[in-house]
Image 1 (spheres, helix red, strand yellow):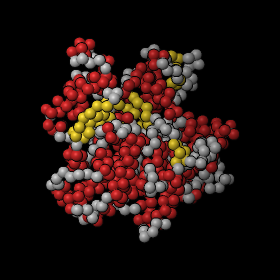
Image 2 (cartoon, rainbow, N blue to C red; image 1 turned 90 degrees about the vertical axis):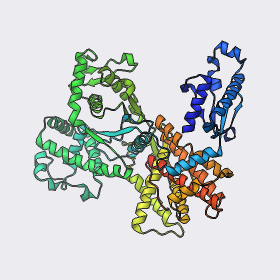
Image 3 (cartoon, helix red, strand yellow; image 1 turned 180 degrees about the vertical axis):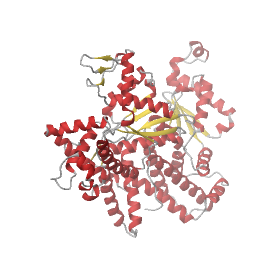
Image 4 (cartoon, helix red, strand yellow; image 1 turned 30 degrees about the vertical axis):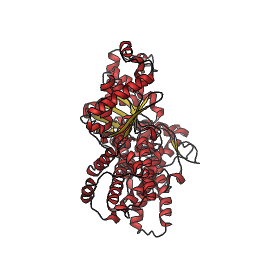
Length: 610
């Protein structure tokens, strides 16, 4: 990435234009070079007439040729940069192209070997960002929507950390309100071992052994809760007396009734322990979990403050409404006519708490696109209350996920796919594939470990290889292909590279020393193709972090794996002549190291063998 900075500075110096106007990209056609700039096309109209006249510049091509000559002269004065550039040329309608030298590629390869963190940087050092992701409601087991949220949110957090930003991951546990009361009712009424047992809170408290546990039904605790919530929701919808009981539970909870709180803790413990098992499986990280019951009252205080300041207005029925005219947003209710709060009410308090505790310069919400308006309204109100500036609050959305051939999923139609069930199904297919391989035997424990890593890797990669905002369908056949754009293909490539290094039986220090002693050599086209991807790794990480787009890194990893496998299939490695063998082993080591780093950022484990 150093060469990118050097070239940008050079172009800025000769053109006298600010670096922000200079864009260097990799040409779509590699024959044109390794970097290309359209600076002549984008700045020609900004040139001073006197400057144009003095240099006889009448067209973009004239200006591009002028810049080309200036660059050649500048490179002649900068020997270190010039050694890294094989040639600089211009093509119509005015692009200036740079071809990098073999020496540059060798230096990049040496850097990978000497730096186990190659690709990462400290550009964001001193910056602290917060990211809220994967806040599943505690009345349900996690489904595919939560899966994409978690995989995306965690990948973005790791990308930011890879460029030096301090990242705080958090989540909100919406553990109060009518939905949780329905869950409590569902447990009290539908988890009884004997249906004749009375549905009474006091009786439950004194006879808890008469109620079922998840183990009694051979269910995970989150699915146990999910089923009870579904039954309660149906019960409330069809039975007015049940609805009355549930609403009374909300009141009793807010009044801190002891028995109600005992039941509340019981069902939440079931839910959260089950969800945590799923999250552990995904490699989730939260540095802080907020609990709605601890701060929701503070949200009401902020609404009252805004009303007093004239920021909000009270409607005739007593509800409190925003005024978001200057933000070009529709208004929203902040507090109901009966004085109860809404999600936005507690989110105001939570945002303020985050800023106070984390001291982060930016807050981010990884939430589906359906929450876009609600979050903009939240950001606007935070701005009005001087909690945070609108521009420091960011919504990172993502597309919907489904399974190919399964149609759209919804809780109402009953075709929700749970995360654990989904991964287990992928894992079963992986085991089948592994067991059918020739000359491959795994003991049961080893098979379980490898199948889990491949299954989770396949699922994560299938999500992350797609643009973040693109809807995606998981295709079992494509996701598990060992020779396609899949997680297993990348894991297999790393395993293949490691197998070569094991057979070579050369330790890392000796490889580095022998590689550094090599003289320049003619490179084959497949070797050069791998090298031309290796040096781009730091740029890719920076771009993916800057755009919150893990798919850029996933695509790069796939392209590098493809190029490496072409090299592996076309060139001898261990049988090559001495110097060539060392060079190729260095290439193998570099690819293994980069893919391991890239996949780790995506949250995908690699394997020593497959």
